[in-house]
Image (cartoon, rainbow, N blue to C red; front, side, top):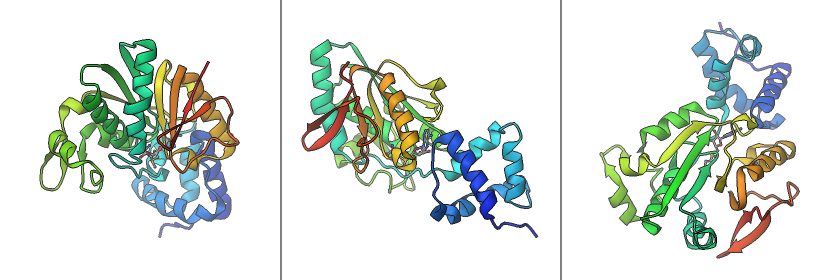
Length: 271
Ligand SMILES: C[S@@+](CC[C@H](N)C(=O)[O-])C[C@H]1O[C@@H](n2cnc3c(N)ncnc32)[C@H](O)[C@@H]1O
C-alpha cells in the first residue's frame, strides 16, 4: 500500500523547493496542507510516497512536475469586482490623472497574480465602460498554468460573479444555466501568460499600472522585498502599484509614494 505520510524531513525539503522556486513560504503549521494538496500527485505519478516525489522533483528540477506542484499548492481564491474600491480608484483617479498628465494614447496594465482571470477581466470591463474610445494593453499572469487555462476559457460559476453589478452582468455575460460565459469582446482584450514572480527573467517592463493583490501574503519578507523591487522596475515613472487591502508595504520598501484616494491606499513610482 502507498506510504502517504509526509515525514518532517521530507516536508522541510519539499518546503525549501517550493520556497526557492516560487517565493511561497509554508510555515511548519501548514504541513498538513502540503500533505493534503500533494497526495493527489503521488496517485497521478504512481509513486509510493513523498520521498519518491521529492526525488522526481529534484531530478534536474523537473519543470513539468514543478508546474503541477505550483497548481497544487497555490491558493487561487478570486472573484469579479473583488475589493471593488480599487477599480473605482483606477478609473476615477489614477487613469484620469495619468491620461491628463501625459495625454497617453495607450496605457499598459498588468494583473501580476491573476488566478482564473476575474481581476484582469474586471479591469477590462471598467475600462470599457469609463473610457470607451481609449486604447489599453491589459496583461495578466500567474504561476499556475491550470488557472491560466481556466482564465482563457472565460467560463465562470455563480460564486465568481456574485459581486458583479447587475447591469454589467447582463451586458458582458451569457448565462448558460450552470455557468456564465464572458463576452469574447472583453476576453480578447486580455493577454495571459505564465510569469513566476520569484523569477525576474520574464517580468514585463514599461507598465503604467500593476495589480499585485492578495499574493504577497504567501511570501516571507525576503521574497516580498525582491518581488516588490522588481515590480517597481517594471513600472514607468508615475506608474501605480495596487496591492491587496489586507497587505502592506510597511517594512518592505520606501521607494513608492503612498497615496490615498477615496480612503484607498495605492502606491506610485515617482521617478
Ligand atoms: C489568492 S489569488 C489572488 C488573485 C487576484 N489577484 C485577487 O486578488 O483576486 C493568488 C494568486 O497568486 C498566484 N501566485 C502565487 N505565487 C505566485 C508566484 N510566485 N508568481 C505568480 N503568481 C503566484 C497563485 O497561483 C494565485 O492564483
